[in-house]
Length: 290
Length: 331
Image (cartoon, rainbow over all chains, first blue to last red; front, side):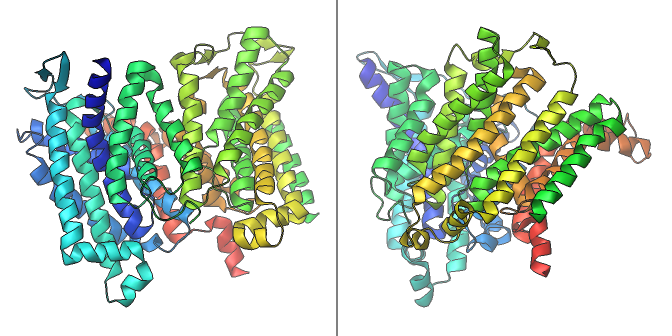
């Protein structure tokens, strides 16, 4: 029973992680950039959901309709102003630029919203479904999971069926060749970063009702998102989805069977093990040596 | 040889500075921070600047030195120099394990793996009992082995000595076989390997030198502050500050990290101690009791990380080779 409980809550939490991981993986695939500001973009999503709830009295899940376009525009602009200028620079410069942008976001939030953690309490925050057999499923996590599935399905359709989606995938496969085929790769980069930001903010908004909201909350999610991407293969969207679920389950299992203090250590050890044994990830095609 | 003379002359001037400034603990404190950051960043530069391996996890070695020293002293009251040696051993062990894992990887993967190792170290220290966990370790004994921990001067000279040693090693490396191998690895790993350079041997060598020096600085820091916890000595923020200092001064240059530390540490201090807010109030630009004045007083102390972020972004976009890189381009 304990096992089943841990498995189910792991999958539910993993869904939200998957969303954050997919955003990061898309950016990596199209732009070949590790976005170290991803966690802070999630933090912005958390605050957007919080203020939509406290100021506008919009349900956090409903507020996604507002948050996603705002975050997309924010990411689109961020790419246009900052990121695209380092797209052909060495990795370390790209990493440091996004680190710097992340520091600016988290510390501006620290100045504006203070370091007091905020809690978003909805009427259903602590309610749970009671499945016969003594298993509890948290209602907010269940809703988050279903929304995640919906968004992932829409994103997959977009990437597979629309011309913009195909152009994005082409850019991801081979930037130069895509450009030679007449694809505007600069625009694709901005779109990818916008989608990545929107997904990060959505993941942030989805966990806002079950997590404390703090300007530095993005930090721990950043490393988790990286682990998910590497597990699924950097740049592989489907891989990141599965990677998120795996990380969610691993976390829940290690909390249950080892100790919740050590769950992050288990995740990082897994991360290193994947880098060592299968650097291309579970689904990636490119090698880790690339 | 020219560089060695320059190091010696500047070291002599730095060594004489406390005599002229008298016993002003505040100024000495800032100078210790400058020396420490310059030495940390120079030690990182050996691996990051010359071998081109951007480690984002150097806090692990700093923390290894600090924690080993503090634990050995509080438990066994060992001689501080022995404790430092212990710190070096622990840091080198972590470095060997890290090197075995991360040096197979390149680019993004290397940066990410170095963070993961540092985070494992940080979380382990946080969760173990003997490391004091979240409470950290406090050193209450103030007179250790004839060393008066209340005086800041020994630490000033200690940090200066490590900085000089680090710079001397760097200056020597630049002209030695190992140094040329490292720079070859930085420029093109595959070309270096095809010329017969043992990549992992030389990368590990650079990492071990860098980790040992960083751990000594950690030991000195622990004894100097007499209190350590994971957020002070093992945080990712520290690793990033070390890299930033090198970037702003100039990565892969001998003096870049020193220039970076001379700029960044006093700047952080001005913001942290609210000197800027006080100056604005004194100049009559902002009234102390007005909303703006109170806001500055409350928040400016936190703003130094924000300023770090802004400097990083500007530096990467407009000055990716750092301040010293600017001069080199003219030449």
